[in-house]
Amino acid sequence: MASAHRPIIQVTNVSKRFGKHEVLSDISLDVAPREVLVVIGPSGSGKSTLLRCLNLLEQPSGGEIVIDGKPLLAKETNIVAVRAELGMVFQQFNLFPHLKVLDNITLGPVRVRKWPAAKARDKALELLRKVGLEDKAGAYPASLSGGQAQRVAIARALAMEPKIMLFDEPTSALDPEMVGEVLAVMKRLAKEGMTMVVVTHEMGFAREVGDRVLFMEQGRIIEQGEPKALFERPQQERTRAFLSKVL
Amino acid sequence: MDFRFDIVRDYLPLLLRGTVYTVCISLASIALGSILGLGVGLGKMSRYWFLRWPMHAYINFFRGTPLLVQIYMVHFGLIPLLYGKTDAIAAAVTALSLNAAAYTAEIYRAGIQSIDKGQTEAALSIGMTPWQAMRSVVLPQAVRRMIPAFGNEFIVLLKDSSLVALIAAPEIMYWSSAMKNQYIRVWEPYLTAALIYFILTYTLNKLLVLLERKVA
Ligand SMILES: Nc1ncnc2c1ncn2[C@@H]1O[C@H](COP(=O)(O)OP(=O)(O)OP(=O)(O)O)[C@@H](O)[C@H]1O
Ligand SMILES: [Mg+2]
Image (cartoon, rainbow over all chains, first blue to last red; front, side, top):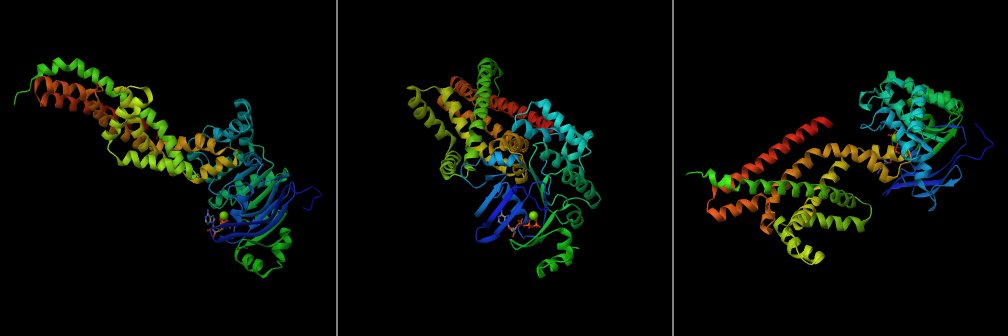
């Protein structure tokens, strides 16, 4: 989706090294408000690292990241405040097992946003309704199926009313029959206009929901474009080779 | 061998008073030691060397030297230095707390490191500070896993507290030694002391099993 707006995410020449191993090399990309960017690529290509750099769970070794006008790597930027504006959904859900579903969701709003408990609770219940799990408010995460857990994790991230949602292979840890329920929630979110960066192997989702698909390999962006164009007429040999394996 | 129950009966009120002291000194020391130990343990895990190194040295010192030496240093050195004169109870609690802190620090560290990194990352991703993530997400989970190790440390501390008799803190061993000196008898004072310690540790053990079952 070409947008006249200023990009909400601007990544410029970002690199990341772990010791000598360069995991991201000279990555530059923009994401427009309301855009859904899907990131694909082989295992170890740096997709998670890129996503984690966006909310500074990893510190980039070089380059610049601007989120909603705020330069992330500038000294005066409050990383904690920026993170609150970015929701993140992990492959392994990472729900807090010692807290009930409702408390998982209200923790951020209460502790970080300082909302009164009643307001946070109402918001959490509304979100649980939205992901179809209002009856699980009092359950502990251990009693949920994978698909349910991931939907709670999405609700937990949304409770902070983030401007951007990051998804790192949200369906990769799920049994096949549960993938659909999670993707359905994500589709709804995209339709409502959430800005999303999604690392996934779900090519159907990429094609249907993505505004743009970005292919990475060995820490570099190899190719990007509209899903239909990229899937049907990849310009790069490496993209073609990858797609022939996963499509 | 005849066992003189009458001298046990004579000394029983004093021994029971000593038991109260033993329990109070141990409770105070495990409580203070646990609080201090959290700081020491977190310090040892810090990114900053100027926190890591001193905590590392602290732990090594208190785990690598005899508790009795530590008790003497606190009793004859540290407490007089701070207050001008010494006090057996204060010295006992201080020495035992400092010692327990070194051991609980390692328990905290192991417990915290056993929690998946994804938990911290999820907490950070909803905008929590690293300290909030530690307090609301990591510690509550870690503490549950630490209960057995903490219980163990508490039992060790309770038994080790018998050493403070040597600086005349009026606890169980202090009174049983007094009993031995008065009557020149061995089995009555020491078997009685052993029995009291055993009842204490046995009860503590049972309570811990209950606690573990409750939070599991
Ligand atoms: N904390 C770390 N320390 C050292 N190396 C790391 C670390 N995190 C990731 N790497 C390495 O960086 C490379 C890229 O990892 P990353 O997880 O970003 O890949 P990915 O594209 O998400 O792969 P996957 O599809 O398997 O999730 C890999 O070679 C990985 O081993
Ligand atoms: Mg990954």
